[in-house]
Length: 576
Image (cartoon, rainbow, N blue to C red; front, side, top):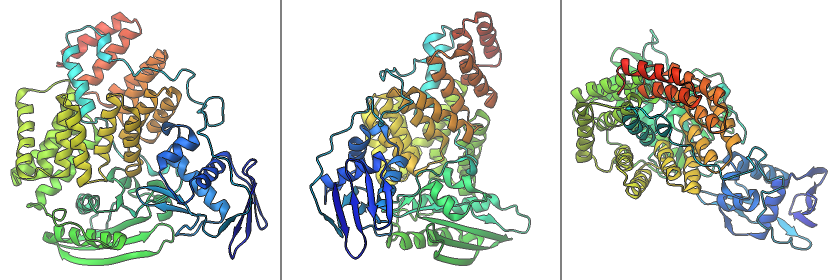
């Protein structure tokens, strides 16, 4: 037992064996995780302890703990010790590094605790009850190996394209379906930019309001020392009834930027306000009356004001470089939304919009990069592309390289291309360069994590995917990759549970159903898997890849007649 005397406050006594805690009239029994944290912190007093070290020491191994689990345990321990006010004095948060237990205001009145051994996850309460008894579950087999048809070769290339371009729709889920467990544990200033309200007389300027917000998010994401929620997650709260505090909890941010736009002809009035999630107070607010032609200047001003308020710095000059053509920029924003949907139809529409943007501004970097990435997506979904289609996409990529070789989105695209051709280390390095330029790029983190999983580097994959989830907590694509990671380390039931949550939150995303079908099939639950793979096809009926998956599953069910009929239908529909 140790007694902790909090100076100018109440005496706090903790039994490090039983977890019983007394502080004045306050009595509590510390749960196992906060108690183990306290023991470990005392052992490492005054040292900076990383989150990974905490996970290893308290949960047993990195993949056993989620970010939310660590946050909850830290918050619970702080509350028990009376260390709830910021800045924390006893358990300090060290931005980008971890935590430091200072013991400030606390006197250890008796024996020191014994060092805490790294707990085993075998036969203890730290063990994951959903984990299968045998952790050595292999990664899913290649779907192509099971179906011997002339389509296999080309469709195998399609699967590679789907992996490389991080395919799968990423429409924001309904905000009220997302759990708020874990609360906020902000290790650095963090902000989410919500969709601005369209207050125009005809309420027909939503696209313009989105274009206003999109570049603000992109610029803030490149600010030094600022964590920015991805658009995918922040836009889930369009027209949502949640209060600012609840939105902050779900997006794991300390501040929210919201606003409105009223456009009348060639004039616009914009109101922007930055709100502290915890207190509800305005950190900054301002209204702007400007000509529509000054959109980019207005975006620069708002982004710089938010950055200065949150970090006391200004954005770098290269971040503020504005597009040359406002209409081309707006077309690219619309195309990006279509890309996120991840279907053949939406990808075809996106490419058409990117090409329209380039007709207005042949050097518009977002359109050049977007064309290349969407062509890769379409290649995977269709099961192939014509030489002319890919030639145009690669030409766009090459032009972007000539114009802006250090653009973070371009670097991400180049990394994906390196992976496609098998240059894995070069891909990893280039993803790193992209993240140096834009540390809030959840897409790059997701693709990097996926590449690590592909290479069997599961710890690094989990780390990258968890970082992506912190930035984009409502992303269906990232949730699917995290399910892949759980599957890869043998936690099959947890992977299935995560996919079920993902499908519930984002029911229109085909990739969720496809992955669920794959894993259920690996577990021998073929009938259930078949229902999911059919749902995948129904959500994206124009995709040859989705149709082929249905054919494959018929074969796995030993229904040769249905498999043959399915393959005939695929060929008749113009499949590769």
